[in-house]
Image (cartoon, rainbow, N blue to C red; front, side, top):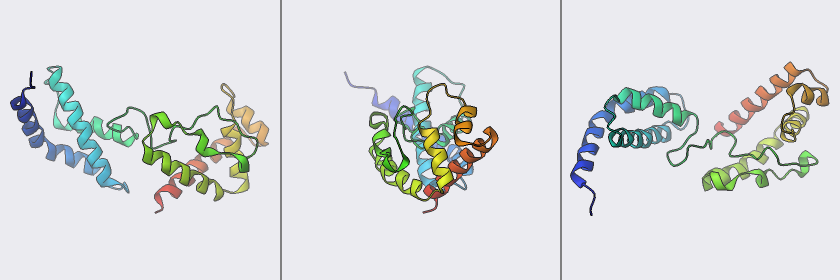
Length: 187
């Protein structure tokens, strides 16, 4: 039995009439984003997926704005169309991975290959070690301490091991995050 092509064609036509509103929402949301076109394309795919889900569930309470709003939130978090998992932030770093020193850390072994796209895995394997080499000694020590953190270990315990206050550890974590984003978006 063939699927009803006319129903799908009608759905596509209705979606295309709503797309300019959704596109404007996505463009406004990602106005300053370096990968603006990619994010807008991702929003389009997510909107189409959600629109089809609404049609399948006989949900007529959607509007182009609400579809775009939630699609933008999903895309901004790094959730791709094919996966609900985040791929942009940490590329699936395995927190249980142990290493004796930062110079011997094989960060590439810590990525979860099963839940990430190949381009994310490749970018992580190249960019993350290069970023670590740009860090100061104190930030590398902080990164290593956070990397080797045991489940349930408190921030105060890590700060004590580093010889700093918990608030300073929070500042260093923010510095690490800002440095990582600056390194990745600098190109």
